[in-house]
Structure formats: C-alpha cells, structure tokens
Length: 175
Image (cartoon, rainbow, N blue to C red; front, top):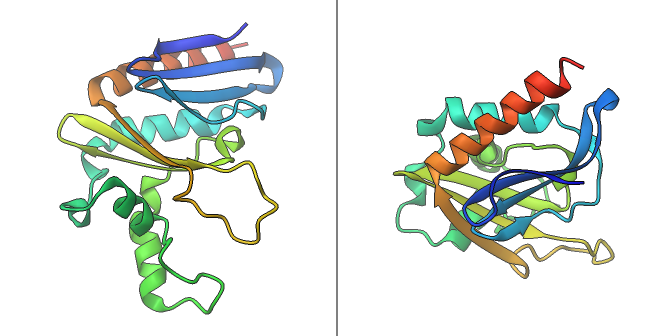
C-alpha cells in the first residue's frame, strides 16, 4: 500500500514498496495533480530527505536573477545546458554555468532518474520544471519534447516535505 504525504492537488510525496530494513522505497512527486517520476525504481530514501531539507533551509537561495523575463522552457534549457553541444570540449563558461545552476536540480534518488528535474522558488511559490524520458534508444534525448512544468505554494511544499522528513527520521531511521 502506498503512503501519501500532502495533497496530490497541491504537492505530495508518494512512497510505495517500502523496505524498512533497507530504508528504501519507490518515490514519486505530485505537483498540481501532475506526477513526476514513473514509480519503477526502489532506492534509498536518504537522498530525498537530504534534498528536501536543503530546499527548506535554503529557500531564499533557490532563485537566480537570470530567470527574470524567461519562460519555464528557457529556464530549463539554461539550467540543464540544453543549448550546448556537450559532446564537444567543454568551455570554461559552460563549467561556470553548470556550477551556477546545478543546485536547481536536486538529487532525490534513483527513483526519479528517468526525469530531468529542476526547480526554483520565487515569491511564495515553488516551480517544478521537468522532462521524463523512458526511451533510451535514441542517440540524443530531446528534453523539450516531453517538457512539463507546474507550480505550487512554497508553504504547501515545505509543510509536506517536513511531514515526510519527520516520518523518515521517526519511523524509518529508528527501526
């Protein structure tokens, strides 16, 4: 039976196939009724906990002025360097760009490995931008082909994240 933290209509964290002794489970996020992740991989939850903690603690650092006047697709392209030919030699400016924006793509665990995910906080909202890819037969992935975005209130995100973190620390780590 799956466990849901929060509300799928706003923000939710869904856990399934929990293996308490391994502290692992399937994980899927829900933002405005839209799922992120295919719910196929069982993996440790500690990375998700760490990422949620960092997003709560660093709320005000998850925005960049370069996002002003850009569409969600343009922000996604900027942060994931999708407009660069990364098969060629990396230029110093690409390294700088990667290092500047990598914090916007937190690692929640291998459960979401099929989704290129980035997020940012602006005003009282958190914006999720992602592309899910399950077809690895293509030579090059078109991340914008399956691009999606959704927004929810930061308060909803933070409250749900804290509920999940507390459950993990009090129910999973203590067992």
